[in-house]
Image (cartoon, rainbow over all chains, first blue to last red; front, side, top):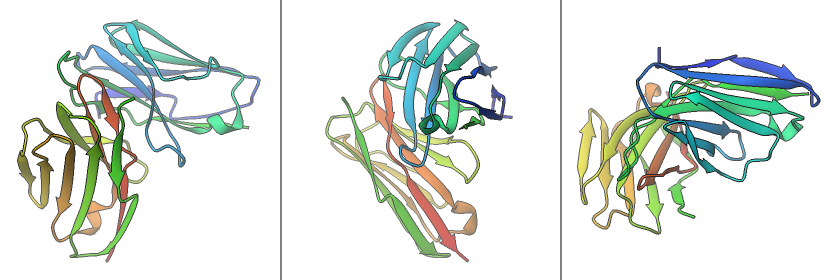
Length: 115
Length: 108
C-alpha cells in the first residue's frame, strides 16, 4: 500500500476512444503529478498541480487533459491518442515546499496500450 | 530548462561487486533525492540530501552530495540480487527534475 492509488492498472484503448485515468492520494499531500514512463524517456514529467492549481505543463499534447478537483484526486482524460502514447502513466504526490522539492510518493501506475 | 544528467544508463555487475551511479547538474541544486524502481514496480523514495558535502548511509548504500551542490552519487557496496532495479536521482529547487536513471542488473 503506497498511499497513492491509481486506477485502472491496465488499459487498452483504440485511437478514437475516450478514457480517463484516476489517481487518489491518502497522504494529506497538496501537490500531485502525472508522469509518463517509456523506454525512450524513463520518467517524463507531464503535469504538476499545487493546491489544485496547475503549475506546470511540459508541452504535453492537448489529447491529454488533466483535472484536479481537490488536493486528493487527480485525473488524466485521454482522447484521440496515438500509438506512441502507449506507456506507463505514473501519478505521484508530495507536500509543497516553496524553497525545495519534497519527496514524491508514486502510485503503481496505469499501463496504457493504444491499438 | 534545468536538467539533471545521470550516468551510466546501464550497469551490469557480478553479485558482490560494488556499483556507483552519478548525477550531475549545470546549476546549483537546493537538494537531491534518490529513488529506486524495481522491475515492474514504481519509483520509491530512498533518501534526500540537502547540505553541501553531505554523506548519508543506509546499510550498504552510501549517498553523497557534492560540495558545490551540483552533483551527487549513490554507491552500493557488495551488491546483492535484491539490488536490481533502476536508480533515479531527482534534483532541483522547488521543482524537482528526474535524471534518466541507471538500470542495475546483478548476476548471481
